[in-house]
Length: 398
Ligand code: PLP
Image (cartoon, rainbow, N blue to C red; front, side, top):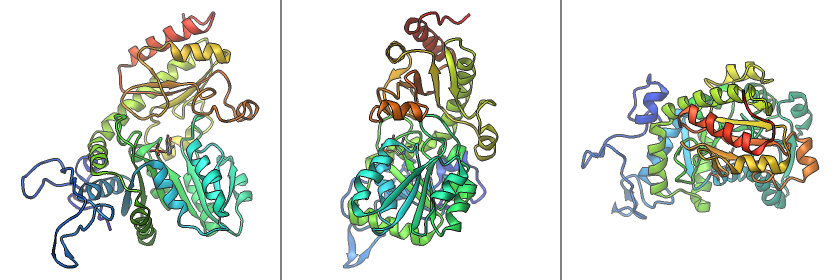
């Protein structure tokens, strides 16, 4: 349905596409921003003769602009927007019949795990969760009825990097599809379709929206048939975003490159600063040369983004004091906005995992995850330094 090259010369770069792809000034008024087409229905000249749109669940011009824009950024041929990241993910699962088997990363987003195990499990679909940085474990998990390999990269909250090209090859050797949730990296830092993935999924709620003011999702593919199926479910299930959400997401994509540059710059500087802090025992950030998959991250990504986690040599209570005592970092779940957020996985995003299992998965009581915003780096390090010193005894930085 979408043509991502519309209104953009073929040879433009992502910084230009993020502003122009899929959009052109309104032909009637010259409005430079794509209007919010808040209309449920569209006039037909004669029965069946519409002007490209008939009913907003099926198609809406503000949504089309967003779909074309996000497809262009992912270097994909087709894009579809959804009411949330979860709605996008469930649309992929709708492709398969009962009896299908899915292999997924063991550290996929908790909501994805819940959707797979508590919703689609009921329809007799089978799921295997494996450590997807271990390619032999992935190979071993594939079965004759495996239809989908689902991964994220970087992963949450330990920022592991999955080798998309090798994983896509394994999926294809088994006639399965490879889908990558590209929410953490965004197309500015990583374009999974170019590494062999069949489907890219997004929570537009995060970096693409970028301002913590919308909930939406997207699916991008080069495969026309897959895109038609996504469109069929989008329309049949009604999992579409409102024109207002599409407008906000489109406004977000215009500044995605400059925001991601700053997120990545702050992320790297904060990771290096934390690495040097006496109270910090471990920093998880793919941009550090000590990260186990740093070389792969350099090949697969253009920079390393704004998500990082670190471990304090501290108890659950001390760590909870640290995250409660910041003033510039806001204590909150979610990620990807311009403002820096901080959270304690053990008591917040990953609290539903029993402690023993959580510790075994590497999520200690002292683990802190941050979504590094675009504030001044000195304000961020000063804030964390003060919060760590007040929360953890004997932790003063020289
Ligand atoms: N994928 C990832 C990696 C996420 O972090 C999230 C939400 O946190 C989602 C998908 C779900 O997106 P949404 O909240 O827009 O439904």
